[in-house]
Image (tube, rainbow, N blue to C red; front, side):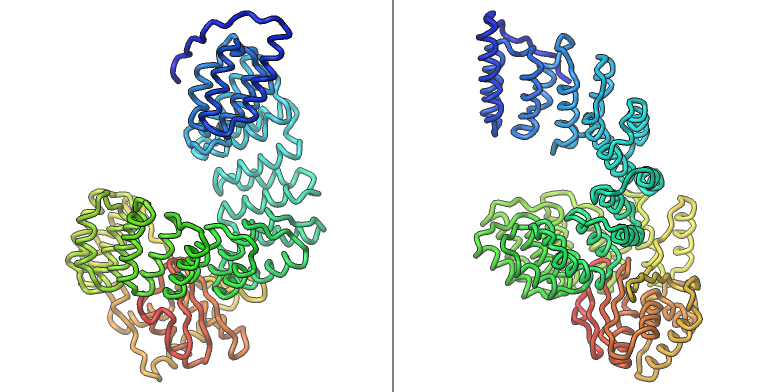
Length: 602
């Protein structure tokens, strides 16, 4: 913090003149909406000798937080002196202004004003702790500060206040899964008449990766007769997105209509995003078309939704409609349209949009835009062009771009180049799991089992574990999770028999397992067996068992679907006459009558 600056000496004013100057300064601050107007108010403040007036300083810091966040720190350093009488109003304003600042470094400093308050013998009030706890939530790496703030709330008798308790739930959930139990303890001990309380805990579960618990708590909320609000609905939609629970997403859409919950732009955007990521892109488009007001996020969400399903031409059409509607695309919208071009093989169109970003809209491409271009060239098999693009990038490529290149090399038989890139990544980023996995896979594809074993031993030594493939199916409101080779499901014996039946049917129609996808030193027969038990095949087998003929099957997978499963599911859709929708970590695949919506371009 820079040293305080000396204020110019101001003339002594009579009490009435001082009061008039104070009121005028307060009016100036209330009207300050830009850095320039705020600085004019500061000039009057100093000229009038109001630099020690705690009310004026309180309003100044509050105005700075909204009108000129970058000026907050210099103004506090210049004007907040030991001689200034600190009261709860001023201290609370300092905590709030920093805690809600768009500047990350200021949010990290917000909690530091609480000890200053205590040293000045200023007693906190019920308004102090919500903002203090919100400030602590921005320090996820330092939960001790939050624990101390909770202890202070207890000491001063505010821990049972509803607003304080709600913020405590939020804070603990921000600290990660290990603190969700603390959040739930606070929740269980407080009155639950308000939707805000339930929303805080539901949001905490979603943030902590326990989306199934969030949905269960929402059902409990309904059973208790508590009316959900917009925040609750957005939290439940986030849980549905995480779970890929389409029926829940559709139910929430009907629930919003039935309960008359206001369809704000934010809520509609959340509905679009959830429906799209759960596989109902047409439903997402319908919500978009029914919106009376749309933000750039609304347009971008629809573009992203179409891109995820490989509907590149439709995504491009919506992008062009956005421009006609007078909504200038931002950098996120360009990521959406570039992704759409990448997933649909529209290389020329993608290059055109990339060039238009800077030339027509003055948007400097970010690393994400360069990543889209590399991904687009790689998917199209243009490995050399992708390499040349990376070499001529004006910014340093990140590991994501290099890994995208390695994936392209693997998909198009450039294993030697892929190995070279992966070795460089391992040297530069020795702690990242994906780099070891990629090099291990390259060794397996070239049948260098000894080198593969060495990589696996190195991973084990470093405590690095491969994320297991996991697939989810939603059925009758219940989410069923499957891991490759897992026997934990109550019906696993029936499921395994169904998988074996599927394998027989696939062989009957001439499907040949892509054993190159099995990255283990096994004979061909064992490799076929290993492919048979992939998580998405278990999930599909379960759905075939539990649903009537002709019912659509929907699966959500945490990893990319492998080539063998992609080919096998095409055959399954034909043999069993089912439409099968699989959402992997990068896009949707809609299998029907032996073909996929991605047209094998993935």
